[in-house]
Length: 118
Image 1 (cartoon, one colour):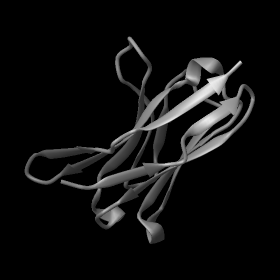
Image 2 (cartoon, rainbow, N blue to C red):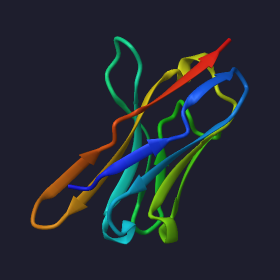
Image 3 (cartoon, one colour):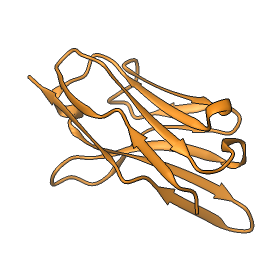
């Protein structure tokens, strides 16, 4: 499994910005896809954004135009830049990694809390 360490969460006012980071324990080029998920209290975990090894990305409709996922291969790190934050973005954000080699290995980070006040 891949070890993932998230950082960058915190408390921010509505309209503000945060950048989440997810550092991997392996060469990020060997990871097929990485993503950010979030889970709010009483709700299911949902995909926020994902990026594959080719650099293609996708976003949940609720964050399109506000969030940007990116990767720095030299630092083995994936980022989630979150702008124009809304109270409904409040959740625990989790980093996810998928490696497909004769099967799928999925890894999760410990999560980082993002709280957006109105």
